[in-house]
View (spheres, rainbow, N blue to C red):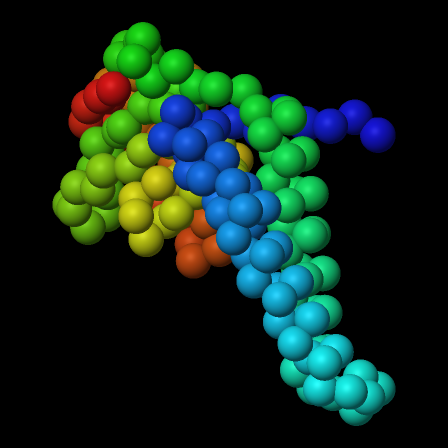
Length: 158
C-alpha cells in the first residue's frame, strides 16, 4: 500500500503534534486510571464504566496511530515563500462570486487542515481544485453539489 503525502502548513503540523502529545501524555494516563478504578469496582462483565473507558482507550490509541501516520507522511507547505502569481496550497485567495457579487477569502490547505467554517478549503475540494494553478483575474467555473458557481480570482496573498 502506497501512503499518500499529507499536505500541512507549519501551523497545521504544530496542531497535529500538539494533539499527539496531549493524547500520549495526558489522555492515555487518564483513561488508564479510569480502567483501573473500574476494575476495582469488581465484576467487569456488567460494568459500564469499564466498557466506556475501554472504548475511549481504543479511540485514543486509534487516533494516536492515525496522527503518527499523518506526521510520518507530512509534506510541509512553505507558506513564507509562496508565489503570489498562481494559486497554490498555502495561498490565501480573494474570490468574487459572479452570481451574487459577494467576495470571499479562502486559504487553500491540505485535506487534513480543511475547515470550511474557518475559510480553509481543501486542495481537493471542488473550489480548491478549480482555482489551483490559476492566476489573478481568471474566472473559474465550479460544479458543486448545490449547483454551478462562477468565481473571479480577485487577489492571491501569502
